Image 1 (tube, rainbow, N blue to C red):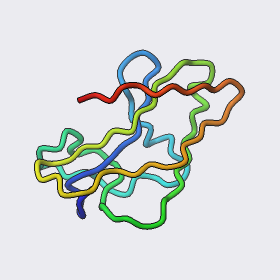
Image 2: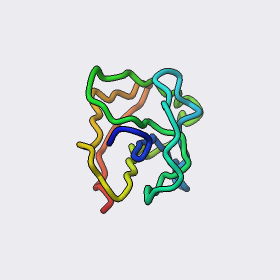
Image 3: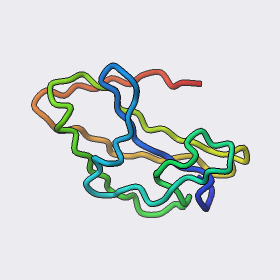
Amino acid sequence: FERGTWDGGVIEISSGGDFEDLGPKILSGRYNGTIRDFTSNPLIGRPGWVEGRLGIFQQVVVDLSSFAGKTVIIRFRIGTDQDGKGLGWYIDDLSLLGERVSCAPLAMEP
């Protein structure tokens, strides 16, 4: 992301219907700002991870217990304004814990 709150990312989940923001279920590593509401960013006005900077990765823990027993799709959604000066979003070491967990990547949307 570029510095400031022009760009940002969120984590969302769907169990077959619309995607919902997992922000309220984040236990640690919460969103750190609100994405500016006067840009061309599709995530305008939403809480998210903002302030582009490279450094130490932050651990984020999300409570997914309310989705136990369901098949879900989890997505990391990035939104940028028209300038797109940042390097992107780095996500590393993703793990899901539970009794029966399987993961399969989906094709990226254009």
